[in-house]
Length: 314
Ligand code: SF4
Image (tube, rainbow, N blue to C red):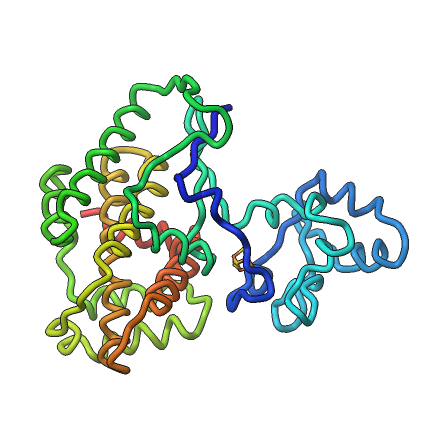
């Protein structure tokens, strides 16, 4: 099957022990059947340790996290003992994949990097050239898509173009997008949006604090501008359009996914303005952190993602 990826995809490298928000902490780590069979065959002390930290619930095998929600194989230096003992090729599929995601089309898989990884966020947001898909292996492979898939990919390309044509006025670009889609963004105040988000499942208490902060400063935030970050915000919107549009079920869902991309951009920008008000500075690292947090809280929780998409259906 043909695999396409963003041009920056191959530049990603996990920063392992230097990562402040390791994906080996706080997430369930499922073990695929093939890897489980291999782990069961590992002998010696490490084999015993490995198998003593595997649980099976409702047919799903996963690692037993410690009381701090750390993977039991993430050592005190924040390095992976399975990687050290058994090598990179013997990690389970989820560990090999993360933070990569896949969008499945009839004759092609689109792969990308997810923003919930801080290093992926840095890479995605720092891109200076326009977003471009390339083949992962062979060049110029034939891709045979259905009519609907071709239509969605063409709409997505049109939206990328509108965003780039309006790179100095992103809000104007967003208005043009909604005119093009003949759709509108729900008319709600910042406080109303925050109340809706506070009702969703919250994974990191920092997210709740940030949401309450921006609610309490609504008037100040509306009056405060944010200079710079144009290219980064364009990269942000395009990331969400790229990742989510092709998974739509119908036209309304497609429009909600476009609105979701706008929603993500506006909320992350508001978090940056809040940081500017609080400490007179908001730098690239702050932006990456808000993008990562948004992604972990909303994009990587199917329940929260569905709830936000429902809120965006007008
Ligand atoms: S979140 Fe990203 S950078 Fe951090 S440990 Fe996981 S893959 Fe590596």
